[in-house]
Length: 581
Image (cartoon, rainbow, N blue to C red; front, top):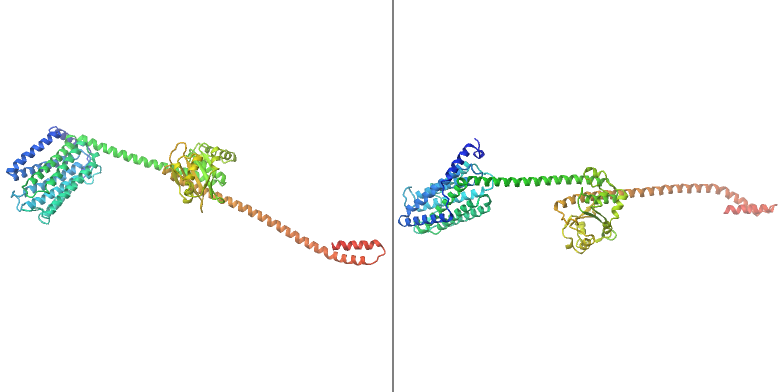
């Protein structure tokens, strides 16, 4: 069996109901506020005068009038439930139907009626509290349904309120466990008074909630419903003060309750019969607003996803390019050009600061503006730009010779977190946003004045072991602050740049170590050659020395002898002397 909620608005039955509703609305009077107040006071005065003669008759007339109006409220709300999208009027209708049934039992058991066996002031008062409980529940449930999808089917609400009414009445009869509310000759019990105050509190809560949801109702309906809740509050206040069920306060309590029922009746007539299409149009307007909000939310989410996708793609291209560059100087130029390129990072300027381990200071190494970025990274954008990088010496020299870079390389900052944000970012290993450079500590203010910094962010460039430097980006021309989303992008970019620089540094150290090893190897080879030559020379000298000793010995002997030829002694002496040398 299909759900009744799913019937289309242009169904034949709905059209017929709409036509009959429109015809009926022509016969319903619309009173001005002054006329309505005059009628209310006149009827009140008439009932009051009659109550002086026969209170039971007046009580019966008021209650039966309320029951008739509440039944009419149900019939209107139930039969026009297809004219409005919200279940607000339907919940009021079924809630007040059950309230009217309990009010009818309250009337029949009232003191002096003698219609229902066992009827008394106590039983009637207990039923009164049950009816008021159901009434305030109808208000709260109806208001809670405003702006929400149906929480239950139409018949579900009807059976729910009927079941609630049966359970509550069972506490009075046959279970008889409902607390005593009035003692003849003494007045109301504390339970009765406190229960009335609790209902008053719930009614005030309903009024506040209705005001909070006022955008779902037109102004006339809102006023009628607030007045209905207000008259019910006055009614409950009267019922905390009376002593006799035939007393003055009791009369005014019943009369204010009748006024509240009349206002609810007029509210349903206004919202469903007199101007159903205005209510329907409001529902459609609300639906349109909800759809627009949902559309905006989805468009925003889609834009965020698209932006995240672009950033991931851009970071991938940057990472590939940076990790392919193994020269530290080339990598520094590429990193800052990527940070400032219009088709890449998009920041207006970027600066690189590194730590001088000898002085313990942050010193400027390179600064590139958005105008200089195309010298390294073509401004055409897309994947092809990253394949056409121009990292030749000429392009880098032009970037180094710029006036902005000359200012950057002159900067020196102490590595103290309380002096400047760069040191704080370096020591804290986190990205920092600075919206107002002029409010920075002294070191930060001097840097801002020297470089003309706009709103900026500084991100540490970290390697495997420790930070190597700080990347500073700013927007001095536009003065645009760096958003949290851009901060997240900068974090990822700095992470990739730091990793690439760390890898380049490792490769440079490996190259240096390799060169040192080659030098040592050459020295070792040279040393080995010299050792071999020395050993050979020693062997040759040894081989030569043995015969020379003999020659020298014989030459000395010849020199000591007197030979016939005087020159022979001289020659022998020369030979001996040369051998000794």
